Image (cartoon, each protein chain N blue to C red):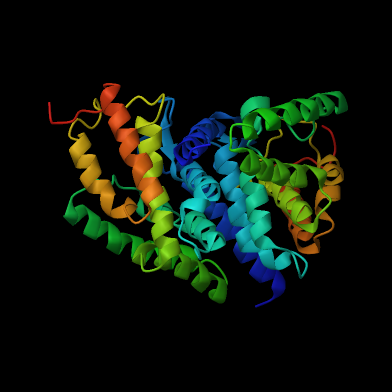
Length: 203
Length: 203
């Protein structure tokens, strides 16, 4: 491949990636004005990792965490986003869609580079490395902060089924490996209950 | 400071940073549907740096570039964004506003960490390191791609004063240290002229 063809492929990929800004998530911004999109979400996660890196175990490669977070949602351009509380069938279909999406999207890049991006995405998905699990924990914590953090509005109107107990059960597997993050998550939810923006039990 | 106070400060900082998603830039998304915001912009720049890192000179610390880009626009939460073609007086006022904004914003963090973030922001602004200049070159190139890249809509209606000659003159100092990026910028603008979405001369 000519150098200018290689560069042209990379530029075209980066313009396709612009579409991540138009993928809406179910989480609203902290001020509740609109839904968050997956591009700004990815930025926020990377910033969180940079700010909260000290709570990762010694030896965690924070630079790798940042790269995982920058890339992890890209395949939503092709496959869309799904709420974390979706059904098992929906999640399984999503996994298949995302695998195909990853091949399509990262296949736009020069081969070795596409394989590198694919490997980053796979590492995040597989959750086998400390870096991938810390990245996922950040990803699990962030929407909790937006929704139930100090000044947040909760989501009992949009998701009445999300009670304290249910959120704790869903989030614990992602967070309990990192005690500081898990403590923040629990404190955030307990505060939200006290503030009346999260129900302890189904109403 | 107690560990839980330290963590609480960091979490509060991260919630304030959510506001960057509501800072609008003058650049539109590539599909023209709305203005880009500074949070998703920061993500896009970091992804660009990850994708185009091979065009930075040998020895460039790409991990540092990513950190500079994740943090560089944060002070807009306090100080707002400004078009790159603003007047000198407006740019000088902006610099003073941004310095104050940096102290306010990064002052929310535990002291040593706030100083680290401030140093990242200062490094980007000072443009004295290779990493800061590569980050700035990416920052200069990205809106050109969105506006005038393949499939872009141009901006002759919104900014009729932006001719080929003027854009080249404004952008060259940011880009010509990195020949591949500068070549992309020039090719993008020339293609835009040929496509009729950028004027060579004032109309």
